[in-house]
Length: 432
Image 1 (tube, one colour):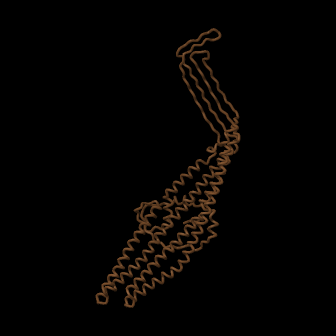
Image 2 (tube, one colour):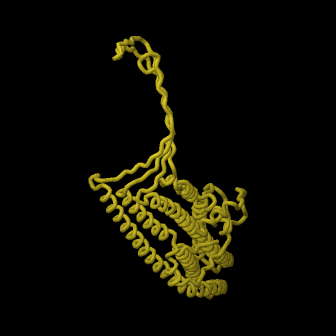
Image 3 (cartoon, helix red, strand yellow):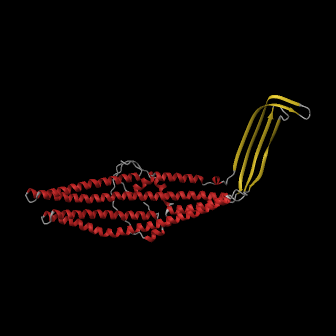
C-alpha cells in the first residue's frame, strides 16, 4: 500500500522536458512512475473497481421505477345492451392512460448482497496490490537499466585507459624506429593494437547508446532524447536470506493471490445464496384513466397507493445452483494452489538470487585486488618496455590482463547490484 501512496506523491512532482546535464537514479524512477502507461492502465482498473464497490451494485439499495403508457385508439363500435339499447358508431376514439411508480427493497436473499459487497471490496483491494506490484517491477527495471549504463560506461573507462597505454606504446616504437632501434613489425603491431582498441571503444559506445535508449523506453520518453548518466555502483551488503524469505508475505503478487482466494470464497457464498428464498418489500402508486367517445363505459379512472411483500422460493432448477456452488468451491482450491505455486517459485527465485548475490560479492573483493594489481602491472611493464627490458608482447599481455580484469570487475559489481535489486523487489522493499 505504501508504494501506491508513493506513486500518488510522485505525480505531484513537477517535471519538464528540458534536457538535464545528468540524470540521477531518483529522477529516473520518478519520471518512469509518472509516465508509465502500465501504471495508468492499472490506475484506471482501480478507479473502475472503486466505482463498482457499492451497495447499489451489490443489490442492497432500493429500486425505484416509473412506467407511463398512453394509448390512443380509433375503432368501430357495435354494441347491443341487455336493456335493449343499441350503440353503433364508426371511428370512435378511445384513450387509455396508465401511470405507475413502484419501489422495492430487498429484505433477505441468503446474505447474497453482503457476499457480493465483500467481493467488490476485495476486488478493489486486489487492484491496489496489483498497482503496488507494477510500481515495484517498474522501479526494478529502471534501476537495473540505469546501473547497466553505469556498468557499460565504467568498462569504457578501462578501454580508454588501455588506449592511452597503446598510444604511448606506439609513440615509443616510433621514437625507437626514428633512431633505428625498432623494426616495422613492432610498429605495425603497435598500430594494430591501437586500432583494435579504438574499434572496441566504438563497439562499447554503441552498447552504451543502446542501453540509454532502453532506459528512455522505460521512462516513456522519446527514444532519441539525450541523457547523461554519471554514477557509481554501490552494493548493499547487509541483505540476509532469512530476512528476504520472511518478507515474501509482503510481496504484492502474493498478496494479490491471497485476495483472489478471498474473492473466490465470496463467490461461493454468492452462489450458495441462490438456493435461499428471496424476500422483497414492494410499494408504489398507480393511476389509470380510460376515456371513450362511444360505448357502454365512457370514463373509467382509478388511482391509489399499494404496499406488499414478495417472496421467491427456488424449488428446483435442475440442480444448477448446487453445481455452480461446487465449481466455485473448486475455484477456491485452485486459487489456493496458485498462491502456493507463486510462493514456491518466488522462494526459489529468492534463493537463486541470493546465491548470485553472495557469489558476486565474494568474487568482487578478489577482483578488486586483481584490477589494482593488473593496473600497476601494466604501468610497470610500460616502463620496462620504454627501458627496452620488456617486449611488445609482454606489454600487450599486460594490457589484456588489465582489460579482462576491468571487464570482470564491472560485471561482478553489476551482477551483485542486479541481484540486490531483485531480492528487494521480491520482498517489496524497493524505495528511492
